[in-house]
Length: 182
Image 1: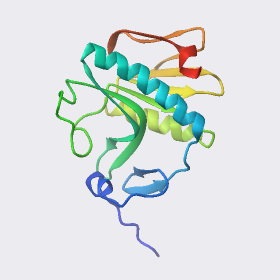
Image 2: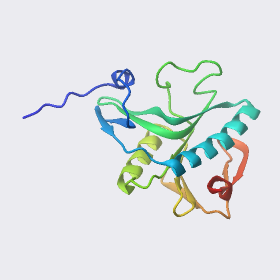
Image 3: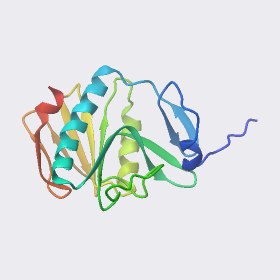
Image 4: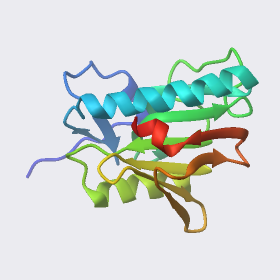
């Protein structure tokens, strides 16, 4: 009988790079398929729109490219957020951590890939909310919609006729949903 050796988030950070994306789930490294061109295009659009606003307002930092978010300890889970916004209250200006941030981001975007399974996305969304992420946006290119989840089982489904806003987290941020899918 084989024994699985669990690793911590800190050990995961020091792992040799893989030729495929990975996440740490309850101490075990899982390999994922590269998501494809369209996924990257949408992530870039979100990152630019959100990042430009955050930079202009000088209120925080936007990260992308599956930046790690610790969603559980003992055993550790590190999820790769497609795009995440950290206010300067969570990560002070000019103090980017060497590893994973000390707290959760304020907003996370998960862009669905063709190979994503609904149960896995629901699990990730639940984990993000449980550790204190205020809003988790699941972006569905096929449906051309964004579902914004908040704590307390609140969710809003936005389509291309709607505007994406975060009145509590990013007052003044307004982007037509259609622009994200353009």
